[in-house]
Length: 292
Length: 257
Ligand SMILES: Nc1ncnc2c1ncn2[C@@H]1O[C@H](COP(=O)(O)OP(=O)(O)OP(=O)(O)O)[C@@H](O)[C@H]1O
Ligand SMILES: [Mg+2]
Image (cartoon, rainbow over all chains, first blue to last red; front, side):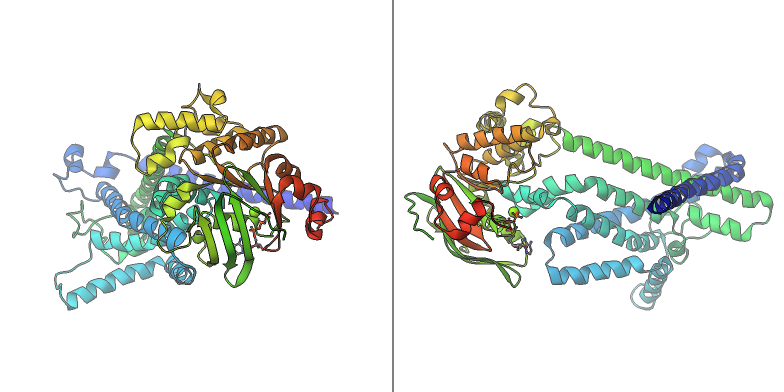
């Protein structure tokens, strides 16, 4: 009887695992089969000459290049804003906050994590409306606003992973620093953070992936089709996920729909690139920490 | 408790009470530790050995619900005074933990990492400290040819001795050890016990152990704790051979939960 149960549990978990590979495989195959043929110079740059398009000397119409740049900048800015804030809050929660305050803070972070991304977008939009009505009549949705809202979106993940990574270090490991006569700050920065770095970086990577793919936030905060390359922090911009959405919703011909698949493939590759970049960074950090 | 006279105490504890939130874990302990001797703290699990030990370098301060009453005098100065420099206190009273936990760095760097982070830069001092500390921890001969290899490649016993070297690199007066051998095999344990005997020439050592044979082997004095009270304290030879207290006798003869 228990033997039978054993087999059932085993095969069920095996099937469940296989399912993941199946889903990923199907997805990739589908994307590749539809998207791969569309990958071409035209998909990226339209009729514009490549070099001039890359450097923004020629306007690119109906192609991916501005969206690639837009998404990269968006992710970079959101990361620049959110990563230092998130890690710092995580450190505070794990190493400094006292119990009652900690509970309130953790709850706020959970609330933030549970907020749907469209609400973050609405928040950004409302902020602009408010600014327009009050002291900044020229305020408008822009790259900076979208990055801020995206940063807000990924902030809770960053806080959580940092906090959990620090707190899950063995109790005794947390005591080594103090036992050697180091201050709390020295302990955090030279002993705990390096040891927790791996998991924190994992969280950063996931958060950045999340920022790259989100559409709801940017839709309300400054993305438009055919904005071209972003003109600075206060300009409108294009982004890959929005372009996919837009192409899929309003395509005029099958070829245009297929180019949406090509775009999806590019977004996937871009995210993969970000992941490997973070992975390489992590390796270097680990290497440095192991040096001397 | 029999009056146990100590001539040159390094640490003196007066009516120490310790609370985790509302629950009291140490109920008024008076004890003194003589200089350059090994004192063992024994007692059943949960009796407060670790808690008491961590009162001596204020490690318990890191638990925010904790509270201490009473006095702990280090060289006559109460370490719970407001004016105490905790960092300096912890340099004087070092600590070695149950699990050996070297940094994922080289052997050399492990020994001096504490000094380096604290702002020391003198290379010469580092080299000298590495040698004296590793010699002090009876590890020098085994690792002197591979100081710059990762410490994670050492055996469990070697790692624990490296952690002891790391603790003595800061130049403490007292070393607290919380079950330093409980994760080691018998051979490594023997090696660390031997080392404790040698450390006694330069340091005052307070060691928590579950292993009564170990207490009997390494210590000069032994204190028996039970449910947060100090039940008996005396010379190790006397305490194990002729305990004064019924509870002590029950514990060391193994007639105890
Ligand atoms: N962080 C803490 N918060 C609350 N209570 C604690 C904490 N640490 C220990 N205690 C309690 O204090 C009492 C003494 O614990 P302590 O760890 O000092 O015992 P111990 O003698 O070292 O036990 P062991 O031999 O198992 O290590 C126990 O009842 C324990 O449950
Ligand atoms: Mg203990």
